[in-house]
Image (cartoon, rainbow, N blue to C red):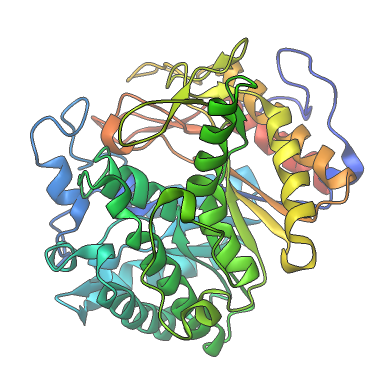
Length: 456
């Protein structure tokens, strides 16, 4: 397939991107193990909470089970070839806890899979950047309380040690925990994601134990020679639905529970004041020193801002549509407002100052309605416009003094989109889930041209 001409202007004829700032960025594409690997029963792989979730009727929108999906466990060579063709500097993938350990012991077959993947990436000139935890908690640990149990952080440290022993001689860049807010709020508080529990504010101890696990892992990875380690938090700009006092208070609480509860302890070594939530976290002596272990990067996942209004009941806020904003395939609660990313980055830079290391945009992307089967490249103009707008937003923040050094597209491939199954497609590459066939979309060619232009 011929590539598009090297232009960073998408079909909508948006303004060209700032070349000087663009050349400062590293470019990456991302995936997650459970979403792309398939092979859920292969080679001694243990069960995770997501295996339990997808096999529970009614949990996944289309009844899909993530297997085989893109089947990257058997087709990783194809995926590395796509990354090389794309021209990215690095590949953010995740390591499956339940593939590399079985009943707490190393699984040689699972470790060998990631060993091969790392070597293929290095041979292709792509920096491997693994994430240790992208939501596939072993079911046996969930049976003992999961992230509500402090012992899970200790078990995570043991897992991190095994992976670092196996790959640390070649891998220096690592992410620890992906989106602890999603695990806590959607997984333990309202049950939309695995493990599907509905504990509301009683879910919040999961925050502390995930952050503690991050700190343990960061120290272990550094001890094995890692030079770039960080957590990945999902953040959003929170906007009150009106200037009414109730909406302002609702937005304050939502910002607390979605943003500051995860950033403050990592960057400042303390939790924000949680009195308004009426909760106390199970912090022990020395925990915050572990959580705030100095790291070289702060990973930030960004998809959209969030408009919040006051609500009655046990949860005093609700997310509402953002007036006047276009939306992605997820509908009215996923507004497209690139300038909100600029504002958030500038605000974070002012809030955390010297405590904030360089930021890596560790995920950014959009899903739009697309067919299950294609006969050729898909002209995904809306995705190109979304990416162009958000890269421009990152560059604007950089011009304002924010240190952003990496931009990562979610996702390299169409994949299993958690509780939405195969109904949402984020990929630069279309995947036919019936055959595994990979077909780069127009956005793949556009991103490839952007990277080439930045390197020229």
